[in-house]
Image 1 (cartoon, one colour):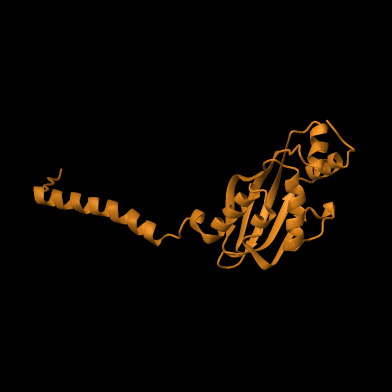
Image 2 (cartoon, helix red, strand yellow):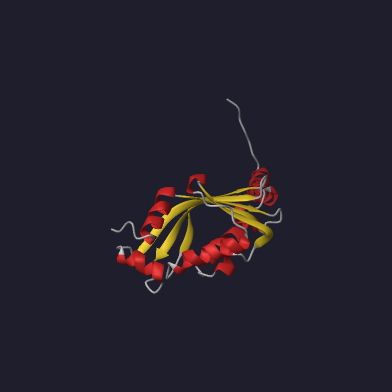
Length: 189
């Protein structure tokens, strides 16, 4: 059996070394790692876009749009043409007129690809139907006081993350078609 002897000064030195390492290692890791996704300019711009939906102002949706902005609704089977900014804002105006309030909120994680400058999120969208608008009255008379659906947003941005180049909205096609039928007066609850 060995007789291991550690002096008090050796024990203090080992304890101080261990304490120093326990502070330095996490600090070095924190300083060397990439900044969290939540703080990237791309995600800040994306969150601003989501907040702009609740303003019910089409101009707010275009606040960060690039000069060559395009909006596409998928799936292609819906036969909706890609839109530039002006047509996107006109479309948003028609949709917003249906609602008293509207919300676009991520369901789960929001993902950012540095390689493609694209933010992707599965979102819930909808709100309380506006009974003061003609089309809103059609929905309310058909038994709908609120309308909710979901989509996946693909938001391609400029490399600096400050401008939105392309917004692709993959919607629930069954819900989109149902809304269209309700607005046409073909379907009610």
